[in-house]
Image 1 (cartoon, helix red, strand yellow):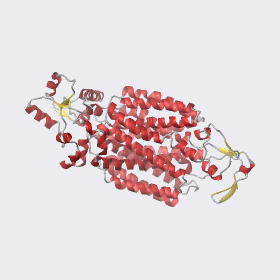
Image 2: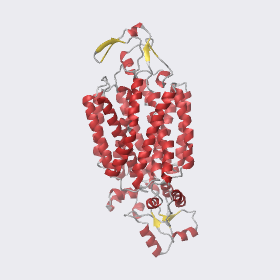
Image 3: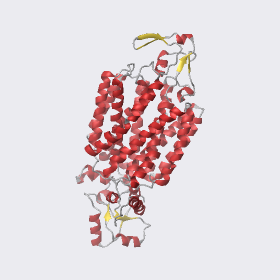
Image 4: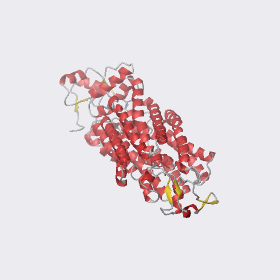
Length: 567
């Protein structure tokens, strides 16, 4: 039966000593063995003291050459590729330029910034202007129908636009977070990672070749599912090789590779004009990242949670060897994990409350972070070429992510901890949002104030997103870490869809900003109810989390009786 464990048989005095050695700061671990272990191994086990995996990882080098190599692999093959796929829609599904072809269209009067004029015969890029004029399909035409997916499938205005840009991809992210999260704790990190990678490649290539709109939407939804799995796995996987002290630095490194991926998206957009070429190239690019599966070993935390202490020790010894450290002469203490702890743990009152607060934070961050990218064309006049504005704003919004990763996330996490650094960044975002309430106007001029709001908002929300990623990983025990992170990605997808719904129903900018500011305030208040994890080792089981949250023994009253007695 899964999760069932047996105690190592040894003399009474040795058992007592071993138990003391396996106990650290109130966290008790059972000295268990797999059914396949021989009696010789059991006898040998009594000769070595037990040590928690976090302590062994520190002695093997908490952040040495090996961890740097793994983070480079996961950064290039994980963070960068996820960013490329998530943000490719900024260009692939952005409106193509259009122009009038009839006198009726050219003589149409418009009023922009208080000035009366006519459309004339010049090119226009802003889809909002086209949709507001209610021209017939015979009055205008796309300048280049193959420029983007919206123009290629002729989805100009109305419900088609939001379906093409949002309602095919982000529901897939929501579903993928659940599916790959479940796979993450049942089959490990490596196998789901490879599955997500291959699925994203196939979905990208076939969607680029699709001539049917419905098939295109289905495949892009499948792509969203695979990218959700990709993102949750590389974050959880990467942090499970790094000791507590160095996790903020690992976070910043992954954040930089995410930023590199955003620049790669920009380069691909500049290199190929035809949107189908862009999607095919991105899909084929995933083949390069199969090396991640080959060179990055299975997570030692997951191996230990499954009772595979030999496999865990092998990985730890490899880390020690490549870091030039001596592996300590100890056994890995295996945490007590019962079968019923897994999915049901998310719905237990005490832990479920944490999950609700964290998920709400992800919803708010998702609404803001991705909507900034999806709405880059709104930072300028509607008479400007939105293509030019998107490029300028995209580069600004991307470049600011590097200082946000090292200063807003890494530095503040080390100085203030996870909770306070997240709150500080979100409060700064609220300040920028409050400024935009006074200054922001969708038809306003491109000026220094607007650039400041864009850069400041993007800096703070990027740092908050990175901190929240690390915070989420540290709050979840190994058994349900990927599932917990996947559910949070589902909240992010929900936030993106809500924000896009506001845009579809033409919610005035002032109202939208007020709503976002209000939600951010609620996120700050909710964050005060979540424990800071800066001094936590990665919890191996739910009991570790409960002990970190509250040392009162009554906190275990809602656990199954056999888990309570395991203490």
